Image (cartoon, rainbow over all chains, first blue to last red; front, side, top):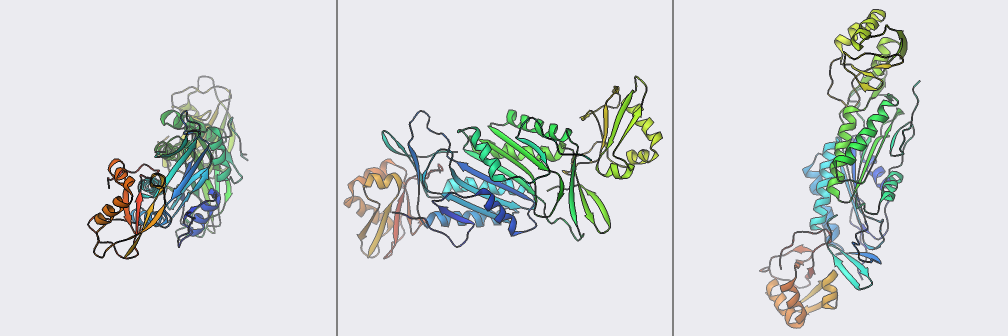
Length: 148
Length: 148
Length: 89
Length: 89
């Protein structure tokens, strides 16, 4: 069975456990006194059942490759935008509705750059990160693509 | 002396005390199971001294008018964007570098709407909210306009 | 008729007070009130000509030709910390 | 030469296993490896023709004409949860 792996930086994580948005924001703030604007994107498991009776949700990732892609996204964002720090965390394993799934935090001197960097990073994460979602229903398991 | 006032909704606050980003995000998540994307903007007091020796920072607001403007921003955002909930909190009083100043959280079904609503709201807050900032330096007090 | 006048931020420091009450006649416009205030507080004349100041009536932006009513609150607001585009009063 | 092959998400369920090892000759390209796999796992032939599948070599997207080396890890990836635009394998 795939297990959760950690990359060289604490700023990039794929993990089973929940995360604390506050704690991650404080780490970002601790990086530099120049940070004046922080933008965070939090993706949560919404009630996407649309009539289906979902019993649980399960995220699977390709360990190693997923973390590499997230690291690349972070590095590209730091290069392309006028930002100071980026954290990307994605949860895997079994989740319930309302649970946190993904967190991206971008710290910058100015807010416009933080918004751009954060928005680009989550778009890119959705596009290139090998993470899959399975919904368990009374009729069986369904692997779904979503566009939250 | 002006004191902090509260408006009719807990989602709009001008206050002396610090706030918890996590707690406010959880309140937003609690509003609706349809929320899948949450975007938060956090403005922090950065080291904007630029050579000046700043001893403290002090935010003053026009009680009543400031809250009314924030309420208007929230209502306009809920009308103009496809979003579900908005929280706006601004601190006043004495702050230190690194302290939280302003928090805007927008919850939506889809992330693009949450980003747009949050970015518009902070721009509008900066534009129309009667809040002023004073820096205390060894040479005296300076009222400053900033563009974080 | 009595009107409450308030000054915020740097204007409060420059005028030397944050609030005062002023007697005005009926049918006084905001423009006339400002003139009367400038007579009582000469420093205000320079401030209004040299600085960007927004004037509100009962916490709403007001036009100079509007009539002031008994008990109104008129406030002088310098540019906000956010850096708003400012209209000369 | 031995190559490790991995299947993820729905492909893992459809193939019925998440991982296998396969013996290949030297100078085998990714395209040739896929052909050999389809002989051993007939279900894979339908999957690759009917579904959008990305194939990676050592966790990087790979071209079909690339040579596979001993110990390489080849993985079959269905579309990600994020809803990526997908290239047919």
